[in-house]
Image (cartoon, rainbow, N blue to C red):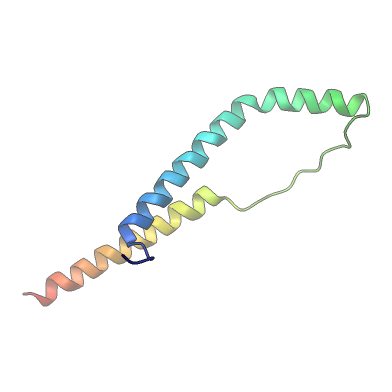
Length: 86
């Protein structure tokens, strides 16, 4: 048994990870107003410092993009393999 995974396995794993991230984002969006209210109250009573916003890498986009690249490479390889058989 080899330690490496096939492109199909990698694609499947990345698609599942991307869907999980998107599902968690939805939950965060639903809980966001409550968290913001809590943070605002804590800031007002002096329990938390003021928050600073920041951007992070969009991992779901990165996974989706890599899936597209791997699928395109597989399709190109299949087309190349298919044309050499003719």
